[in-house]
Image 1 (spheres, protein in one colour):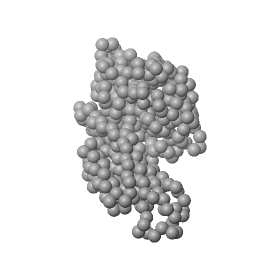
Image 2 (image 1 turned 180 degrees about the vertical axis):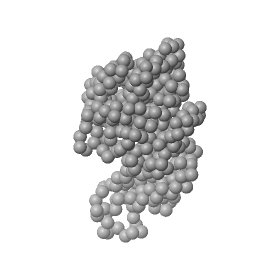
Image 3 (image 1 turned 45 degrees about the horizontal axis):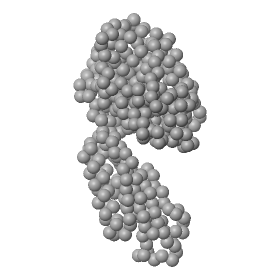
Image 4 (image 1 turned 60 degrees about the vertical axis):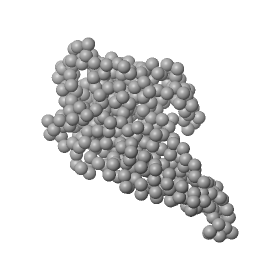
Amino acid sequence: MNIKRIEDTLNEFNKIGYSRHGMNRLAFTKEEEKVKRVLIELCEKEGMEARIDHCGNVIMIKEGKNPNLAPVIIGSHLDTVYNGGQYDGSVGVGVGVEIICSINDRNIQPERRVELICFVGEEASRFGMGTIGSSAMAGKFDQEVMSRLTDQEGVSFPKAVENVELDFETIRLASREGERIHAFFEVHIEQGPVLENHQKKIGVVTAIAAPTRLKVTIVGKASHSGTTPMNYRKDALLGASEIALTVEEAAKLEAVNGTVATVGQCSVFPGAMNVVPGRAEMKIDIRGTNVESKQVVVLKLLECFKDLKNRRHLDIQYEYLVDKAPVKLDTKMINSLSTTCEELGVPHLQMVSGAGHDAMNMASICPTGLLFIPCKEGLSHHKNEFASIEDIAIGAQVLEHEILKSM
Ligand SMILES: [Zn+2]
């Protein structure tokens, strides 16, 4: 692996959308279009052919010796969150470019066609919906749902795709469901602290956690904070506080099953210092790779709601915003990637992914492998996100071996 070349590739990507507050290459924007162009130019220099599918995903192709064999695909994304980092997504695409260059350096013509894909719209920041490009490729693009999404500026999803010269009506044609694909691989920064803490260089992902998200509305009674005696109050915030503590308690009991839960949003109404809160709205994010375990947390919450109704006389309503099933990755792939790490003497760890990735969609249409590389202090979606080029090169080396093995 050529460390300098990997660094140059990442620098080329990160010239686009750079600011001192972080990277801004939001989904379906001019910046994402520009960085896709940069990728195409880099790959065309390596003799690859570019194709853009109906969703805007870039598919770079290196033909194999045997056109009858199903292709091997490497992919990740180049879009970012608002004020994001320089490694999330870029690393996976950069590693793909490096593997192609490295194979070309040695004049290897692989048996199978190799594709390098840059999926569009992986981050949910703009439309509240992520992994859009890979969903479309996996045949899971829901036109009905997508037609209703808008960004912060009120631009609808159909309008946004039209602005980058895509046709909303034909996005579903990006589906490759039913096509023969030998394997899909993604390399991604871990976005968590596990590898660094265990001093491992590679995480072989066994499963990708899925979120269950609830919106909870607690209704009490707004009243004067000076004239309402304590025993006459129906304080919605105090109910919300008990719910937040129950979320922690329930998730801690389920930690053995890898479940985590968070209250990341809570609003209090009317929101005045001298008014007892009459209403509170909170959003709860429960994640894990074990469906039953996530359900245990939800059941504890429902018990808590009942208790608050009786004890604090609060009215509690809830709705599911998301309830997705976790994705287990291909066992053969996990074993094969772990063996490759052993063969290369790379310290590795099998682990689950707490965050969603394009790999989870590809896993529904072909055998899929996901590799993590360490990132500093687990920091991600932040301008100070960092992964060392040496560690990225190890990821590239492992994946290159794996791909040549699978030919
Ligand atoms: Zn990512």
